[in-house]
Image (tube, rainbow, N blue to C red; front, side):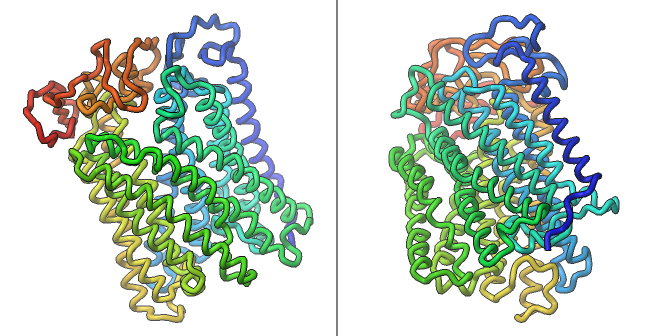
Length: 638
């Protein structure tokens, strides 16, 4: 039966979140100019040239009122890091519970709540926002735009996320207070009829929060499509549009088709829970939910993975000393993944008893979708083959991405085959496959991007030794965590269980593998603590960058627009206040030239100079050291 509507306290919380959003939207609406920081009547000055914004207020007010794409990108990034920490803490507790077969650390209901908040947080509050962080900051710089096409909408899209997160986390936050609201225990898939029958207002709050995140993603997608189509500079055409912008464009198209469907399904689920409708309670209602959810859910995987593929495709050539091999085929494979991702949703439902003819057709498409991913992997490896590979921290994470993605992809092909899927469905094999793609793939690409553009964000260089410690701990931790889960799946260990002492199977064998996986999680956690420490300490005290080419890209003709902007402005988005000025001249936007007529960026095609940033508490000299390096073994700051 559907439970009664949410109580007064929970409704009040929802109203407060909505009022907060309205206050923020009202303040943004008072802006006199869509690219000015001064409210109406505040006497906004003229807008600067290029990507600049003038009249930035200082302190907290700047971040609350900004419409600058760079500031908004940084706020997306900070929000994503906090969400990553929330989801990470949840998984550490879960894995600690699984050290022993009985349920002894937390209750089964708490475990289920942690599992739900972990999944939804990592997908909706970390995955999508962290990619929006890169997209917001970089795309206007890469395509030569002044800003996003709709800066106010861009700001509103971000400010939808904090209230959405509070609603999603409300059950877990309020549960210890004993106010009648508990964490949702539906897993991230929210399958009916379980999600309807649980009389828990925390589920309603979570669904409302998911609505806000979906609206945010949709607004952002519209903005990215409009920006890439209409705001490109005169020297940026479809022929030389960079690969990262291509992946964001395809991702945005996917969002526009997928997220509205999820929103409609959530509305129907809320109506079933609170108003007695029967969308998902009648005969075949559970199947209807699965079809609607997975029609969104599988494109969501590619919504999350395409921009990281773009990051990898963008960064690998920079540290291989050559252009991306088969650029057009990488673009075509991106388009293919975007289209095919909408034709494979039912492979999540092979065990539901669907028509065998339908199962066979979905199996064929599910196997075929591996081909575009294989094309990308081949092109990445071929780009490195014969190149001047520099194993900087960003490049290490790119190589780690490829290795982990291959494991995740191969295990996914196994699950696309109906006979194998019927055996492995709902086991830890699915967990291993999915997390090799999400953690071993997407997160590694994100780390590569953060390290690669860290000098652009902050004007400083990170600590190289800590960066490499972060990589190796993440690589070892990822494989130590998820590789044992492959064998747990082969042994028949079901997923989503808080205890496994009564499991039909070799309990002692399961326990040993769970201990290995838990050890891997702790290794991962240590690596991420080092990562956060490195970011904060380097931002505050790292060695300052003294030119616009910290990675020595110009010698290979790979210096791109964002670094030229940095060289010309010498102004990072983390500098509080001030007026930016963008100079003229720049490289080929596709990274095929190294033209720097202003002389502000490194234009060193001979490759005979290298910045040796120590990054140790700001003690690095930042001076250029003449090096004769015909083999290209220098690492440009690593």
